[in-house]
Image (cartoon, rainbow, N blue to C red; front, side, top):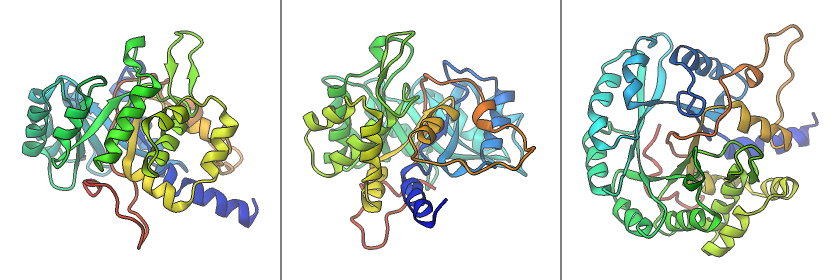
Length: 332
C-alpha cells in the first residue's frame, strides 16, 4: 500500500468507524448463547478491527448469566439494555457494578411513552461518566419525546428495524428523527436492521433496510443544516458506488462532527457491516500471516437483523473544531 493510500485509509476510519458497532450478539435474530457470545467478543477485542467494536450489550434478563463468565483479568465493558422499561434497570445495574470483571459503560431503556420515568431511572442509576439512552417512538409524539430528553442524562435511541415490517421507519420518519436530534443538539443512536452499508430490500422478507452509510451521510447533511426532505433523499440512495464516493469526500472535521451525533449502533454480527466497509473500499484488512487461524470475520456469531444496541459518543473533536452536541462527554 502506498503512503498516500495508507494516509487516505487512516483518515477514513478515524473517526468514521471508530466505536461504531456495539456487539448485540445475544439479541434477536442472532440469539447467540452467552457461552459463545462472550468469547467471540473477547476475540474481537484482539483483532485488527478492535477499535471499531465498542461495547458488549446484555439484556436485563440475562445479566445473571453473564456474571458466571466475568473475568477480572479481562474485564468486559458492557451496556445494560432494558427493553422491559425502567423497572428492570436497578437490579441489573447493581449486579454488574458488584461483579469483578464487568464494567458498566451505559444503560439503554425503553421509553414506552413515559420518557419522564425513564429519565428518572437514568438519573438514579447512571454511574458518573456513563451514557444513558431512552428509546423514543416514531410518529406524532417524537418531537415531544425529544424535547423531554433535552437537558437530561438521557440521549435518544431510535428503532430502524426489527423482525416485522412495521418496525422499519420509512425515510421521512428516520429523517425527522435525525433532524430533530440535530436541532436540539442531542447525540443519538439507532437500533436494529442496519446490517449493511447501503439501503436495500431484503430478498427473503421484503423488508426495506436502511444502510448505515446512508444514515451517516444523512447525519452529516443534518449537521450542515439540511432540512428533513434533503435527509430523506440521502437515506433513499441505493447506489453503493455513489455512497462510497460521498463518504470518501468527507473531511476529518465533517466525520468528527457527524460521529458526535451518531454515536454507535448495535449489531448481532460484527462481521456483516464490517465486511461491507471492506467491500466498498472504505477499509482494508491487514494481511494475515501464512498459517494463521481463520479470521473472526468468517467465524463469529451469526448474522444480524436485529433489535438492540448500545451507546457511546464518538471520538473527541480536534482542537479548535466546533463544539460537539450537548452530552457528548457522557461516555468513556
